Length: 170
Image (cartoon, rainbow, N blue to C red):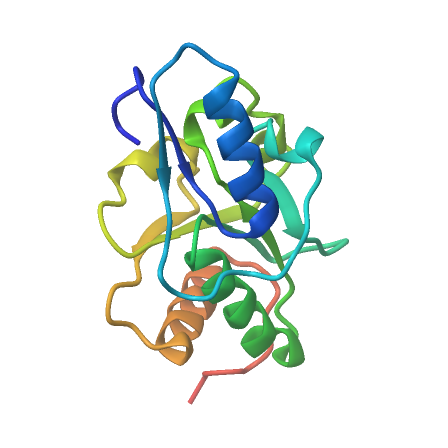
């Protein structure tokens, strides 16, 4: 994902996989498709959304923050959203199957530029830093539990002065 000469897809559902294969067979650019052995999100997206490189998979009218994730980490972001929702924390989740395509269409991320944006990855997170404002953070979630990730996001939202309930306050 760091090499701009190769269009890389980290697919999080069947729609993203199908689009990535279609893209690969209809372009002259080198294309890589990263697949997970784990079950992926059952969500469905249309090609017009995926071809932008990122799209909203779960929206909130007034989110406290935005979570960016790709591949199997989309499921993790959705689970963290479910943990925090009953506690008054509203999160919008954006699936980012292809940062190469996202770089050409940053409207999806810029829409939330006044919010805290957090990005998840289990490996190298440096490629995500260019999408994150000062109030956000890239979180390496390798070996982290959903609850610990939710606590971290909660504390970061609170640090940024967003509205929160007392979910993890002691």
